[in-house]
Every structure is written in C-alpha cells, then in structure tokens.
Length: 222
Image (cartoon, rainbow, N blue to C red; front, top):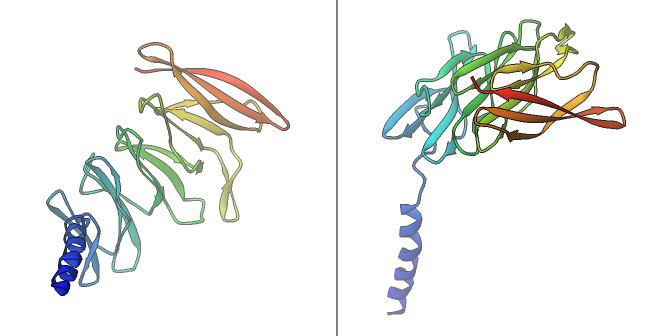
C-alpha cells in the first residue's frame, strides 16, 4: 500500500508538468534549427533566437549561411511576415520584440560589412524600415498606452578606423525626424502626453554639462 501511494504521488507530479511543457521552443533536426508555431513549421535554420512573445503574437530571428559561409539574418513574426523580413547582414536579437501592449513589433538590423564605412543601422517597426543610420540608440521607447514610439539615431557620423563617430543625434517619433540640439549634449524623452485626439506633447530633457534644461516638441498624427 505504501508503495502504491508513492507511485501515485510521483504520477501527480509528473503528469501536470508534462501537460504544461512548452511547445514553442526551437528544436534541432539533423543539425538544423526549427520552430513549430501555430501548427506551422519554420526552418531549417543554422541558428535561431529565443521566441519573443506578447499574448498570441511571436517573433524570432533566424540565421542561415551560404556556400561561402556568409551569414544572413531574417526576422519572422505572425504579426507581419512569417517568412521573414530581410535578408540583413545582422539583426541584433537583443533589440527585437514587441511594445508592452503588443501594437508594435520591432528589431534593429545592420546592412554592409562589419566595422567598415559601408555598415549602416536600421530600425524596422511594424514591417517598415527606418534608416540608414550611422549610429542608433539601443532601444525603442513606447508611450501613451502603445500609441507613440520614439528612438534616437545619427545619420551623418564619420567613419574613423573601425566605427562611425560623431554626427548629430536626432529624435524620431513615429518616423518623423526632430532636430533637438543646437550644440553637443545628451538628451532623452522625459514624458509624452496626449493633448488632443491626434496631438502629443513630448517633453525632452537636455543635459548640458552640469545643467539640465527641458524642451517641448509636438507631434501630430497624420
């Protein structure tokens, strides 16, 4: 009787764990990676990132290699193109995913040879590509319950040695470019407030040495 109780206890632990096992993890077949998502198989790939998820939406990055061992990358999502956006020379899988409410998906990509003057940065948000840039901030920010997105980027950096340096950092709000600075300084978006149905007030904090000043700009939805 005691042995039967032990077996029963073990089964009660195993069965729920098996039933809760994730089915959206990548798996390997003959050395290649695959995903099985929404009843569809995606692959084969040389490498895949972890899955970014927001409710029933998913996104992952894939890498494949050609006969010369050159890598190309794509971003796959059921919120847009399942077959993948790209190809790109690299996609930073750490800067890829969804806005908090799931309205937007995004990723940061590169085109051109690594560490040469040809390399350019791009943000792709809801399938639309923004760029080329010579440098970008490492994040997209979202405000007003997923109504507004922003990022910072440089278009005119100069290539020196191995990297693009300098240039003016500009703010991009829903794709519209804003020239914030009149002289070198750091800045960031402090807050975004909706002031009417299609108009938003964006408060910018500008750090000039030991002084911090504020500037307001306005964005209007088309």
